[in-house]
Length: 231
Image (cartoon, rainbow, N blue to C red; front, side, top):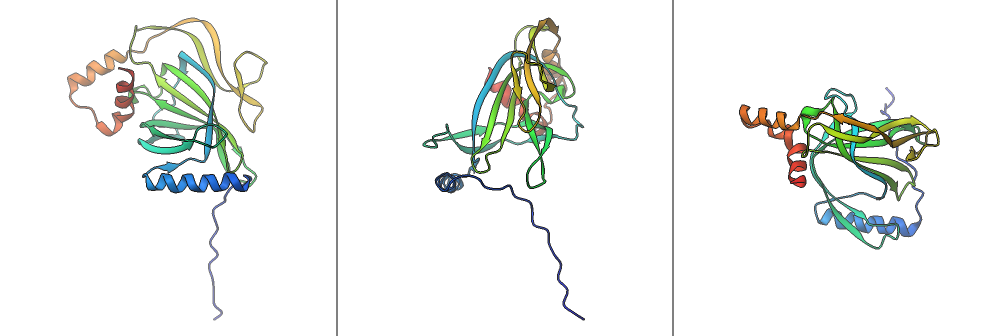
């Protein structure tokens, strides 16, 4: 019987478009990150918009693309000159992947990633949060995506009066604050709205947990770290 071989499909990789100098600097940074026990991210981040007290809907706990991300440490370049690297401690949070686009290698990846630093009991709820929209530019492939940090407001009055609403994958209308989603004809937007009162009841949730005893720690890490930051 003739020898038979099993062909294994190779994972798709995006085409490297960076120049030699950029590739060399990324290689050096990756080696340095490994020596420090960190992960190197070959991207630079640029803040496009920030706004406090924004009304936003959180995906449900069973949402297909919602994932719990444990805290980790990364190293990345600061600025496009690639002269300086920064150490970043990423706290535990929930990530949700949005607006899939197809790359040249036929793979499908999200054009938007929302990072939710929230109390887990508010998955599936409408919350008030501080929002920062950033452009993530991959130095090796040239690809750009949007990263949106959403930090739940934990202190203050309840209800909270909000005058801004976060809109995802919205049609472009030429309004103020629209930010194009790379690879699409849609946008994200922190839109100005009429004042609206949002009841959050964070205090009630915390009081109930205290009466019930110690909550499940692994499920509460995202909230606990965030609460420490805001105290």
